[in-house]
Image (cartoon, rainbow, N blue to C red; front, side, top):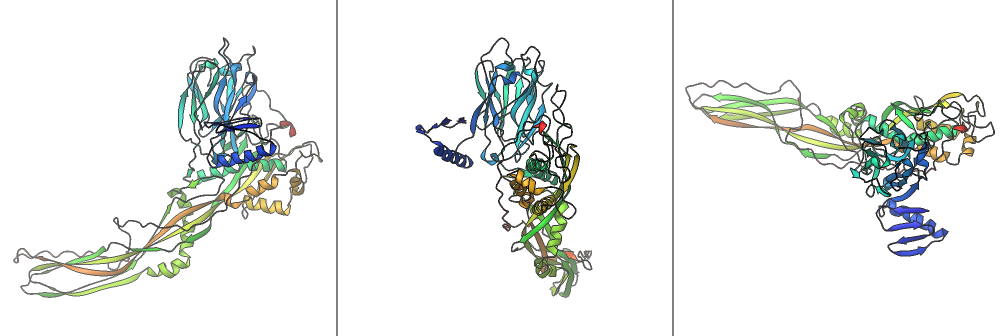
Length: 608
């Protein structure tokens, strides 16, 4: 074992280690305990990422892929040999590959191949990059007839991202390198290569920059339904592929894949194993190799599972003028005037949302919901609120109440009187926390494996087609109008329902129960929405009279018109100067999900 830490004084080689200058020899038990300590320290963020050297031993000079040897590590640097006259790919000795930050350590990986076929041609001065959010894991190349390969022979980049990593990076920068001498040329600690830059030319030393990016450790903010669907799809794809493989579907990877689950692309609400070959390859391997697994996510809906209210916060708002009228006393003596106002007042209810605190994916996202998203689900929230005892007993009774004001006022001689009525308002702010769950069905489409016959562990486990040499195309859906995918999968696997031979499936795979338990944990598909209802209602009305002395007793002042809302129900609302109150949202604890750690399965086209 040969491991390096990135940026710390820590080195492991064989059975001896140096830590802070103290050398110890470790036996097998000590190494096991030490490994557990290392994992714990890494999760706590006490140590930096582990890094290893992936030596390619001239493999880069031949047709095929050269990658990090650990499937879950990412390239941090490139290693080259001495400059020679034919400065070809055979001098690219390997890569330094490092582990992800702790938040992504146990995440599944999404793998795609970025076509660089025409990007690295000799004439180009250009960047060649992975898609946003992905990191470089390997290179694929063709081969010249003379046996010497150059930059233009690099045709694809193997780009990988943790399934719970967003489609953007943390910090990024361009690392200038002088790639014309022996050595390791790396990004900074905890940065990974996402692209390379070449100047015009085809030699290895024409690489002059690495594009280096850190993983984004802040949780992703999800703004809409489509993004939330994408998060679910990315965090379930690998386990769904393994489920399909356990059932007996063949070709559970793209034609360019190294491992099962590699080389899928998203098309709308579907994952499709890519049947396309590397440029220059003439034929794929395996029976029916162009018929590859497709996973469809169908019939999406978002339903409220539960809602909890906190005690409302009551505050008094600024009074609002709702009526005024004028009266002019042109007499030379006092006049008593009776002012009267009455009206019905209705309360208003305002519904607003805010950032919820968490969802429940492994190491996953915070959630923010915008107006477009709320428009799809606010009806169910409002209906639940109006049917709640809180609304019926406390808030519903505030609607349509009639308030009356009546005064007799002595107006002095030669005076104009303005009668004003004000509404005193009360606001009750009721915070809530709601749990929503995404419901959908999952459909597998693909070929069922022959796998060597009925008694073979590699055959399919359909009751009708097990061991069939026909390798039939078969479509199967978990879920329907009444049961979501995860409910149907749980019931069918528990009750050993046809058409799948569940007893044989469980016997054949020791991890399939873990995969099913992970996929059927409903907490994976839930998110928390925080919001509040603000009800404003009229508490009482009061009046006052403003008096203004007439300037010219001989000139009659035109009577002012009355401005009020008699015969119309007045709706009490918060004014522009009424600031919202701070509230505490009810706490809801979603079940913590322990990620399952699965060994990668090599893609074997001949197993079908």
